[in-house]
Structures are given as C-alpha cells and as structure tokens.
Image (tube, rainbow, N blue to C red; front, side):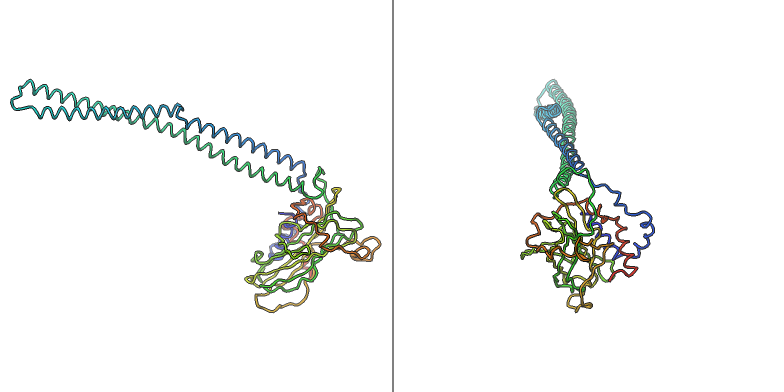
Length: 434
C-alpha cells in the first residue's frame, strides 16, 4: 500500500478515534515522526533482493528436482527394498502353497486310514496311522514356515513403503519450498519492475530523497457538504503547479473514508470514488494507487480532473472525508510532492432523506498547504499567463503509478500512524476546521 494511503488511513483514524489519539499527543510532540528515519530501498537494493530471491528459487527448484528423481529411483522395481519385498512376498506365496499341499496330505492320509477294511492286518493299520502322523507333523511345519514367511513379507513391504512415503514427503516439502520461493521471487521481481517502470526512477539514484513542494496544490471544487446514500455527486479535483518550473509527470492521489454517526464503525466499502480523464469512462480510485499521470504540468498551469463520489443505498447515516494530494517526478530524476494531505469532510445522509446540510465541503489540511507564489504573479496560485491544461490532453494513459515510495516520505507526508492523525486532531480541537 502506498505511503500516501498510510497517512490517509492514520488521519481517518483521527476522525474516528480522537480521544485515543489525543491521549498519545505528548509522546508524538517529543518523539517526532518515526517514518522520517525510514530509508526506502533504491533500485540497487531492489535488484539485489530480486537476485537473491531468484537464487533461492533456483535452489528450491533444484532441490525439488532431486527429490523427484530420488522418489522415482525408490519407486522403481529394481530398488533394493522393492526387490527384497518382492522376494519375501514370493517366498510367502511358496510357503502358502507348501502348507496347502501338507494339509492335503493330512486329508489324504486320514482318508486312507479310514478306508482300511475290517480284514486289514495290524501291520497295515499301523503303517496307515504312521503315515497320518507324519503328514500332520509336516503340515505343522508348513504352517509355521508360512507364518514366518508372511511375517517376513510384511516387514519387507513395510520397509519398502516407509522408504517410499519418506521420499514422497520430501517431494511434498520441496514443492512447498518451491512455491514459497516462487512467491518471494515474484514479489521481488514485481517490486523491482514497478520501481523501474515508475517515471524517473529507472536509474540508480542511490536512494536520493525527494523534496516537499508547497507549490504543487490539489483542491477539491464542488463536493457537496452532504451526500445522501443511494446517490452520486460530481466534483472537480484541480491540480496546480504553482512553481516556476515544469513538472514532467504529476501524480494525483485521492482517498475516501466513511463511518457511521458514532465514528467508530467504518463503511468504506459502501463509498466509491471515481475519476475520469474526460472521456465517458470512469475509473475507480482504489485507495492504493495514484491516478494516471498528468504529463507534463507546466509552470503556473493547472489541470481539472472530473471526479464523482457514490454512496450505496445501504450505507448508514454518518460522516465521510476525501483526502487529496499530489506528487511529481521529473525526467532528470528530481521528485517531490505536496507537503500535506488536504481533506474535505462531508455528511452522509440516510437513503431517501433530505440533505441536513446544504453547501460545499471546505478543506482542512494535515498541515500547512499554501502554494508558494509564482514569480511575477499575484498572491495565491495563479496559472502563468492564465493558462490551464485540460484533462483530456494532460492525463497520460500510463496506468496508475505503482509506487513513489520516497515522495511522501521526503515531503513529510508519511508520518507515523498516530503522528499524522494527531496533527489533524490538534487542528480540529483548536477549531481550525471550517
């Protein structure tokens, strides 16, 4: 999630949980912003991370391949334990056949004894009884041999199966390791690709910090002070370059947050912020990315972006706030952004209700947000020569920027989660919000 979004979330927390945040104010006043000490990774570091992730993934793939090859060897008929198991099973079958033959000999000997006529001599009867005794003894030995053979076959098969299970388990573990390594590699590759694709960040900058630029302003115009659930309202986001230099690419940022009347239950999923480059297509602001780049924005010029805010009919009556800001990055690698987020509060009316407030939402920033006067211009932000840049020709279809991690930090925007919120709470407490 982008650093601008982190701050917007923190400020939203200030709106919903002011008591808890005010309780932590002294610690913030003394400690300052924790994020100011953070160092964002540069292209070189991201490339090293991607290379390391690739190495781990390659090792995991190799280990998985070895595990699969080992399993194939163990599953082969010629594997020693498999050969031993097959031999033991064969011996058990032979023992079973021998027992069956011995048992049949007992049956035959008994039948011969029973078939002796009454006229048989004692010698003949003794011979038949002896033969039956020998058959029974042989049958007993055959039964014992079969039991031993069955036990040996069972132990041999168990040893063979244990080896196969262990090998299969290693393959499973290797597959999981490969999957995890692939996920890490994909994430590292994505981070590097996004950094390289970000305009102006494709070169090794050594992590050079961007700078805050008060001359880059973002103003919401025409957002009603009340939005009734089940309706959509349109407004304009004006992005102004109040400096005396052209900004090669300017990236507008917007974020919307809503709660019920208590301020404790979020209803973010029921409010939808969209923007348009001037065509009939509306794109959703997903609270995670910048809008498409304005390329370029000349000194003193501004661009108006069509916006609209929709509130689902199921949304409870409550409060909402829209945050806006802007960042820029030049082809020479220089970069910066609005020092602060500017927020516009509005009331959410229950579906079917009449607006309880009629008017236009007014801004309240997380800190000073006054544009530096353009050299040669009057006070305030005035486009040089009275020019402005329409959205249709300025919003480059470059897709949402995937990350300017340094911009918000260097601009003083990425305050610690409680810190940015506390600034807003203090301003509200002092009555600074209109």
